[in-house]
Image (cartoon, rainbow over all chains, first blue to last red; front, side):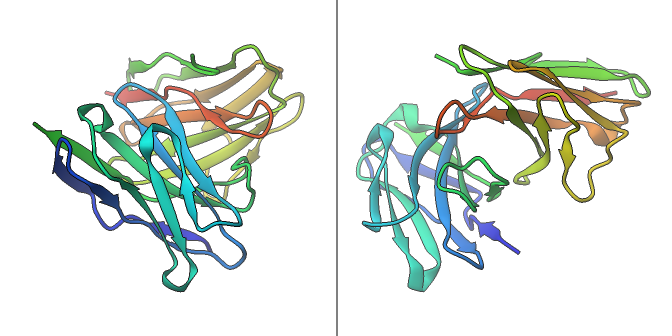
Length: 115
Length: 113
């Protein structure tokens, strides 16, 4: 069965500092991996996705993620966070590159930004 | 702007009553929509796949008679929580896919008192 683990429930970083959110997955086939962000009162927004090719993928809002098959990881990074990045971040894995079928989500990581 | 809209964003209902949550696709037709539920401090879990004009497909462990899904038109799917109990209090979110990208609604917070 597929699963996603986000080890960090809550992370606090200073504005301007770098960020890395961890995601580990378990999947029996080729994983299609996604990162979503949920701002307060908002729905989920896709940040980026990986399904093949270059293991370093670029997303919106200056985020990137690196797929490491040997570590079963898909960590999200940003070199310099902004106060507006405060939100809940979800890693997900699914059977389709479009993310339209039975996504399995991690439990989320809540990001707090301090001045 | 939003391409998938949910309503209401927050609802409080009494135990034993039913409550309906709507999921609308804006400016596109969605033959398939998905309903997820998020328990406190837990991940989003897929509840069911809503299919326009046919019965919804429920995930294992989800009570069909409790969570009624109706997808009567190409732009609207509804989730009705019947005979709600406090343990049904949760965050419910829908998604739809115009083209090759999935979009999520804003979610609906249900509190059963």
